[in-house]
Image: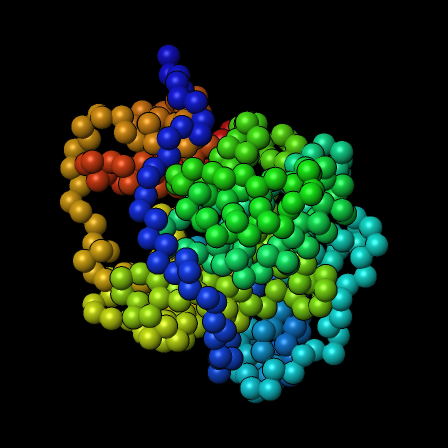
Length: 439
């Protein structure tokens, strides 16, 4: 009989931190000549373009209307003229509309921009939806949906995700250090309007300055605690973070709300404060630019829609022979095919690596060492799942709970045979999902 013998939140992987820009102050990028805004910068329904070629727009102008409940509106980060509305292909392979805007350099703010009127829970979530906020830690889930629920009484804990466990990325760390007042103000706003009793600010121990800043700000408030976490990947994954902070295990197929929790990225909650104060929607974000092929690694604030090529150029360009460029971290990031592609809301890093670091080692036969099982943070058994996948054993895949896999890459990272374990897990998840649909 197939059993899952390892407890969830097992070991994870001790990946290199490489937090090279941890103490590097964020710098603002100049306004780009053009921005390109895909209407799909979030999980859920594609936004609908609200402008046409020739239209004049301003900083903060709505250019994409949220379509459906799980969606997010999109706004211009520059003032200028819409020079094209066309279809482009995004990293998922889907083709979506995109709005191209040529900046006029004046950065004139849209006259309609004003702080939202928030008087209760409903007006608060309405405001968050209008802001265009999505999870800034990389997932891109619309924040208004996360904060909307039928029964608020089941939520007792707000967890602020400041783990930032991926190598290289330090954008969230800089949010704590450079913008702690907005972090606290955003926390208090969510706490107030959702009626949450307890707040846990979760930070990995490799960010001592961030911890010191937040410990200093919460003095006297017993409802807010700072939780130092082991620096183990993927500590920042939502389900792992909940278990590390509260000891609660989100059930299979469940949500954080099923165990009384809401998890928000630190940069997301800081944006909430800024939006309530100014009314300026999500038009820019902080991201880390690093990697062995980047000439001048930096933390930069970038207008959403800026071409990746412009971002790299601002950081001194690339050096040597570039093997790969990715958005996000090296464990779960997305490969960049064309640097003309723009920065999206959910991008927290641009990493460029030389060919010597990007080339994959030769794959060898599995030696049945079990390291993939030991490392899996969800307690899965990748080597057994691979057998079930190769045998097209759908009941077996279901019993092995392959759908719990978050594709974090721990199994591939620790595999001494350098097998594409994560890819096999992804294929197995797809097989099980398609099999369930056929039923």
